[in-house]
Image 1: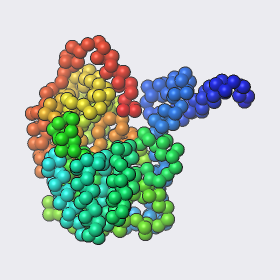
Image 2: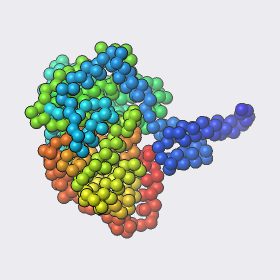
Image 3: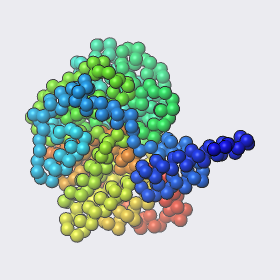
Image 4: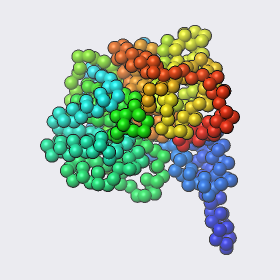
Length: 490
């Protein structure tokens, strides 16, 4: 094809050619008809802007991570041998149950290739005042190693306290492996990282030491996991990152969040998730001999609670987190309570929630509630969530706004049978783009604790209604619907 002599015409022609090439993957891989139409129009009409955005935001798979995971499951590779060893150590604690809750957990376990295990203990840690001291205490008592993974690490008083504690433990001979997300931790200064490395802490960015272009093309994928593991015996999973605002000392004031502390075979499952991320971040392709020397011994806990740790993300063959929400919604018999800071579900999740509500009205009297914050740290997400009021209200789904402060916890309670605590929200990022980690617990005692915790949260909330939304100005409604169109990139 001849390129016109005028430079700007040549540039325009190349942009339109690039837009035409991008049409093929947009048609084949975009998940919704609305998204497909949006990309087709923008790539054809505005390729100068749309092509770079599509290359960064249009990708839905994390192919490099998928290849890394495939190597780990190759039984003939050193990684496959280690994976088999890890899986075998959990077999004595694997449990199957034919009832509804058991079937849900077994299905999810099959998706992520991890067994549902008994022999665990679980403790809710409500807010940073409870979670951070417990995490710091475990770090201080570490005898062999510490694994740390956070989406956001800030160089404020909380971040510096953690850094100083890790340096102290590294000087004691404790092996420390630390992952952070480059986007979430974009304000973390190089001096913070170099100070840790100088003392022997092995700290790496999630996307690792790759060339500039590959990292740019992965900007839309984030490692949103928050995880601490000590000596392979205790693990912490939850919503809080490392920063002052999680102590309620930021612009949003009081910060409502939840972590869960685990002991037992579930800890080994968190280590598998961390090891996969570490493998990706460090680009090791030989043998696992250079990887963290972790403890895979299991001490069963007398509480004997059933737990599955569910890693999810864009490398999933079957979307694990989306499947979790749909399964819980479809099988709930009297309660489905969801607490999330960001409520912008896709069509599949929304349909499952509506189906649960329909069954409530016609058959089962299921109490379906969504709890979200009244205050917003991401204004587009909050505006988008208003547009779901009509869909929720029509089906009898209750939407509640937490008023006491900023609600950031990611918790689900299904009946009196299953509770989840983790890092995943109900938005496009957690459903399709972020790497997340969730503890799924089947235990009436833990469910009763979660119920009491959420009832207290509902007491500090107000129910939102469609009438409240209808009273808003036309301009506000238009702004909300415009924000919803941008949900895939929020």
